Image (tube, one colour):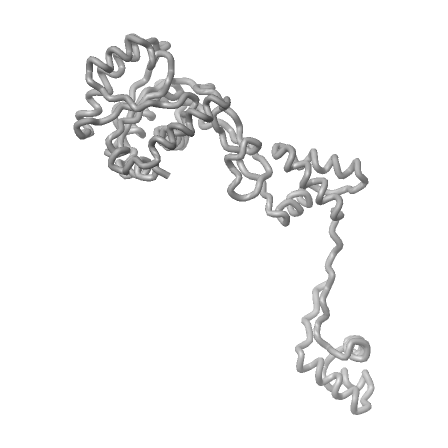
Length: 325
């Protein structure tokens, strides 16, 4: 049945005025073109509440009691990875039958939404202290200092797109709380290994590494790709090289090679890939590659090289510009 149109305030006032003159409900209805039952309802409301305005409406009662809400909040606070299905089952055992949609609505009223869990390095206390030391030592470095750094790293690119995400229940601005993240270790999965470098001036060389990288191979990569990238990007004198603490990077022979080349190396805290802005560039590359949907390894390598070359220098500059934060 279609919903009837609500009477205007003027019409409701006219009904009361006519009623006070002694006219019947039937007569008022015919005069104003309103149903007799509606006239009667307006008059009864006026007699009871001394008004014809709409009264506050309570609406449908909540499916989940205040105790149920507290139970849900305790559960997701203790374990943000709890699923809606788990919460539905918990409430059902407590005697309340609700749907997953009701769970979502209840949590959203409490300021909690389902969001993707951030992937962060698995840190031990020694790693935390090293990262804090690095941040304090470089807190006052200028934007020009970071513009003079050549960032480098290796990554694996999957043939069929970016890894899937995991969702957690959390409040705003708590994405990096340990309970809301997914610990990762380096180089988990993928099909081809890449080495690349970049600076604030743009992307350097990107190469595919087909064999397992050892110290000798790594030094060859630096000799054939790092130094040419420095020249191409016209790095200023006194530029700084960044790489992580992978054993092949910190091997005695590699350190000696870097010393002979008179390269200044940025001291780096272990387990800190997230401190390297090239991680954001890898993400940019993988998103671009996934859009093109390569179907084999040969195509994957070709597309990686093409998309890396297309990344604007402004993207690189912005990554370095915001690094101080």
